[in-house]
Length: 101
Image (cartoon, rainbow, N blue to C red):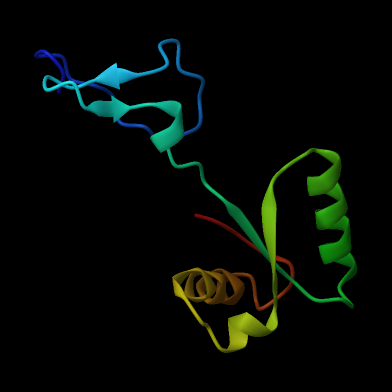
C-alpha cells in the first residue's frame, strides 16, 4: 500500500509506465530490476524427437529456457526437479517435460 492506495499483485510480465515506485520512506517498492520473471525449464533427452522440435520452436520464437537432462527427473536434485517429476507423472513420463517457475 502506497499513500493509502492498494497496489495490484504482480502475476505476469509487463512493462512499467513509471520506472520506479517508492514507498513512504523512499525505499524502492517495485522496479523492473526487482521483478522476477518466470523461467522455463525443459527436461529433454538426446534421442527424443519431440524434445528437439520443442527446443527449435523456443529458439525460433526467442523464448528463454534452461534445458535439463531428463535423468534429473528420476533422481531430483532440487525443487525444480521435484516439480518436473510431478509434471512427468501427470503426462505418463513422456518427454519433453516443461516447467515454468
